[in-house]
Image: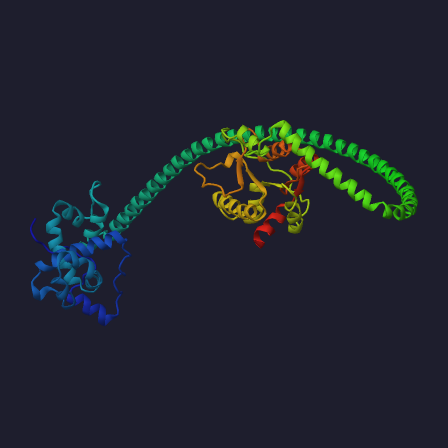
Length: 463
């Protein structure tokens, strides 16, 4: 296409400009408001043509912009290019001639005032702004409307995509909600089942509580009855005591009389007593010789120990109620001073009360070593009993005079202690150290002396 000067209905000749200036004629119409895509395309077309213009045809404000790199020219020089296109019609005509030459048929159609239907509306508006053929403002408005319609269409498409995405997310959330609802229904069924079990347990506990309360009322009634019987027995005992005191007074009076006569016969009685004791001693020697009894090297507790020496350990002792008989170490010393006394110790009952912060092995070692000192001081027989469930293999040898026993499988240390007490002959002093009230009550019925664990702990601390 030949390079021709385009028609510009807003470009006045020199005479018309002077006439307008001197006669005060009408000023040209103001520049239209361009859509942003159209403005950017006009600046891009102008920036692309700047290097092709002779240096004297480039306006002074744009000469520096013309030297920029192509990718920076339109971006950095956009304000100056737009201002120069608006203020310098001659510069715009020069740019337009080169732009139309590059546009080909589309540029020719725009110069003729028409726009092909398939043409880009932004490109048409940019060429119409530069060439300014008749009706160019309408072309720019139509292109702006098309640009806005395309932007609206893009916005609508974006809204549709967002709506589809929201619908997809909503469907996904609905599926997740259905899964969660199924889980919640399963959880609700499980909770209802547990609630039914708890209600059944509550009914059972209520029945147990009622039965326990009934037994408690019955025990209270029996206690009141026994208290009445005890009161009557105490009254009878008081009456009997008064009668005994009267008889004692009579006996003391009689004894005073007898004392005077006995004083005379004391020498005879002493002789008789000496003769009786000598006879008893000779009879004991003869009886020992007759029965051929040799000195024993085993004691009754050794037979109890042998009966359960090979039993395996299994079940730990159940918790028992703690109780005290007395915690006075002086009482323990008095009992150990009796002839042939036997000290039986509930091992863990003492160690856990005295030094429970240690390990079980350290508790056993400390107690056994302390009992060895007591055995050495008193010469008494000492037996310490532990629950077999905590038995440790490879224990160090016990001190002299101390026997260490473990309960057999299925038996607690309390039961083994009661077996040891029952194995002793009647009349032998047996001292059992335990703060377990059941142990104390059980051994007391068999004639043993129960003492609290604190009495032994204080005795060990003292020594």
